[in-house]
Length: 363
Ligand SMILES: [Zn+2]
Image (cartoon, rainbow, N blue to C red; front, side, top):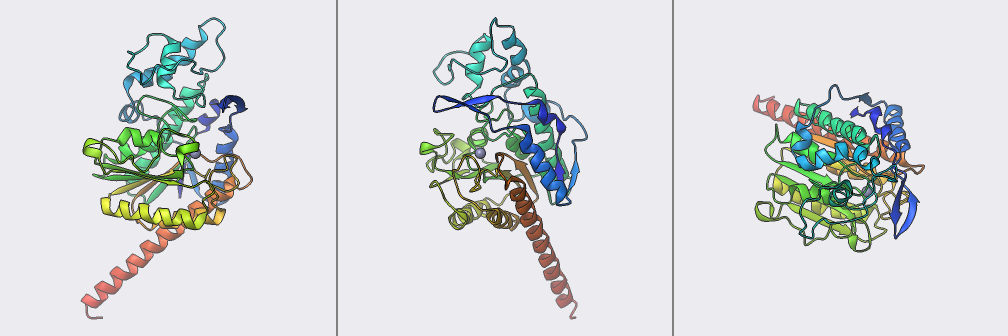
């Protein structure tokens, strides 16, 4: 598997977020990406850094110009406020209440940030840009004929909307990869297996018929991202029916998750996409600090096998998955499961083709 990563991720070091009003250390730390990269290297995967900066184009294809301008400049503007914190953290929330676009840094932070789990520090923009470049490079590898590529994105992306950060996410790498695949494919499916609902990805494609968004996640009624992720959210307008949410009870394990994944696969097959993006969260693991679902390491291999069975050109985009002793092993199990089965499927098909051609030759 080709693995695209960037050392620039380490420039983003969020300090804290609020959980039920209490200040906690952010688990979205650079050591996550380091553990994942080491695991990929240890398993012999071929690693590379993006060959180029793909510029604003792929970002602007899914995010608003206003939001990109905000992300790039807000830290410097914030720091000019007397007594402001090192990190941009919103404290007013005008979004969605009919107010116009605020002029001030404080107003814009409230407008563009969904919660306190996406603090912006000096290196955040550079890290988010590099993370998105990994997703674009992985999409390029697939567009040029590779069966699959893995983008080791950090910070993650699937909670970021077209104009709003949230839940450790700034630029929606999964959506950027899906949109980039549209350059070569008419229809693209996104399957999000992260513990949390892929609300930003859903929001970006909610009114689109050309990108199917599917998410399996812990029931959001009492779990992040809370307002989104319910089965009734099916898409709107031209996108009606092109969004599928499969909320799962807290503590769901491998077998029940795989049953839900089978429903997701039927929906993807009916959509008949030309390419696939997997939003690969590893936080559904039983040992993850979020403790939402109970997937085992072996379970990730089985999930990967099912996804590989779609036999589509696939970009794997790293989303959540926090430090625990199995984090690296979970990635290894997923990549082995994916490559093993994608390879087996290809070989099996090759054999079938050979048998068919031999039959047609009367051999
Ligand atoms: Zn997550």
